[in-house]
Length: 115
Image 1 (spheres, rainbow, N blue to C red):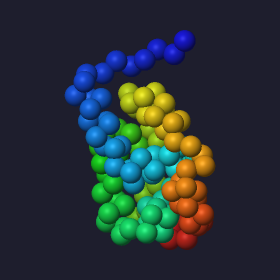
Image 2 (image 1 turned 30 degrees about the vertical axis):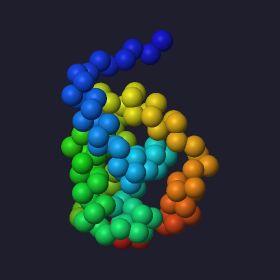
Image 3 (image 1 turned 180 degrees about the vertical axis):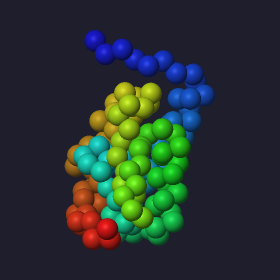
Image 4 (image 1 turned 90 degrees about the vertical axis):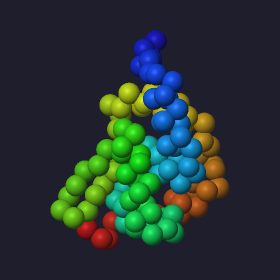
């Protein structure tokens, strides 16, 4: 049986507030599959690079994703070592792989061409 990492109510609330934004939640669902560059999310979500970066900054500051800098580019992946990882993994499992927004984002996915 998996041992849960117990957290304060404030920590759990902060985590839930952070992922309550639909774009951030979908970014995390995508990051479950693989790492992504900011430029890929710009194309997929159809929002500006600063907006994507702000979403990812909030996820990183909450300890949900990790950043790998390669030159001037940044790649993001889920932080499996995060104290929030078991809870967020369970929440992400509730999003259907057939979710229309998720499928639309995956259709827009392109290989990394900015780096």
